[in-house]
Image 1: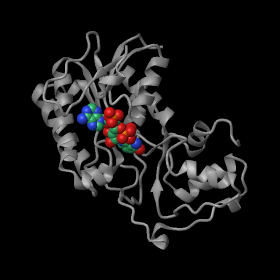
Image 2 (image 1 turned 180 degrees about the horizontal axis):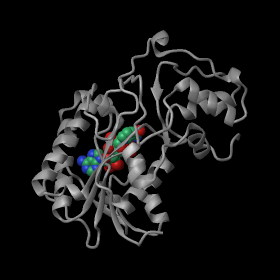
Image 3 (image 1 turned 90 degrees about the vertical axis):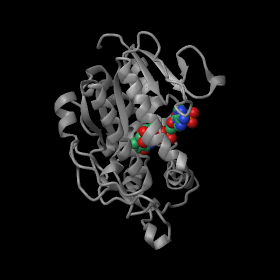
Image 4 (image 1 turned 45 degrees about the vertical axis):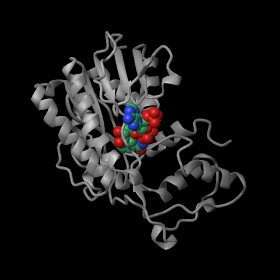
Length: 296
Ligand SMILES: NC(=O)c1ccc[n+]([C@@H]2O[C@H](COP(=O)([O-])OP(=O)(O)OC[C@H]3O[C@@H](n4cnc5c(N)ncnc54)[C@H](OP(=O)(O)O)[C@@H]3O)[C@@H](O)[C@H]2O)c1
């Protein structure tokens, strides 16, 4: 194991944050997980609400922060002006404040900044965001870099972009499993592409990045661009169901509007692999992670 260190995880209750906290603790590190709910405070949890004006001071001894919290809801990013303020002003300001306190910072971003029409974008490729959420994360990255340059702290910052993250209770999985349990089929979309990773894989990979303290742009990705039909068929096989439990359809055929419909979702990991040794997660490894016991 690397030396025991002390980490701050901003957004400790988020999907990604929770799994990062678990991975860091499992490696023996001290972790301060942030919440903005005072009634949930206990040892190891700290209060951070970046919508409040005061500057946040990291706990003594912490020398690395993961800034994971964000306004993540696509519809909110389209309609609520506060989402843009959070993603483009308040979070970059928090990153700058943590850098100014001498910490190393990982700022979490998303594959959607690349727009989805380029296969396996490199860590240092230019952004081409489409939807409001992607635009805000791209603008947030740019603002983080501007403030980091002002502080002369580029050697203590990485921007780590992620593809879609799944847990066993991420929609639509609970509905799929319930349908199969009832002996019914499911109708996943063949025209919805993603490169999913398990929440455990992401938490563990972020812990590795935190231990290695690599600056610059990094990517964590599933190894394959797959449709929800591909994913459903692989999951059905793993759980011991026949191929007939999956009836492919498309969002177009069903008249379902989907805000972000990329042609390609996977991120290139060339630089990340070279500097950290991390590899993309295969579809089979993801499914085994989500349902280790297989059927039942
Ligand atoms: N999930 C994915 O598939 C995915 C894919 C690519 C990139 N990402 C990126 O990964 C990061 C985490 O995503 P997620 O899906 O895990 O997030 P999430 O579950 O939606 O959680 C968002 C977190 O942000 C916190 N937050 C919101 N406003 C805050 C404020 N004013 N002060 C402090 N905390 C605040 C929330 O706190 P509360 O718990 O108090 O509400 C929550 O913990 C984001 O940066 C996202 O862009 C996620």
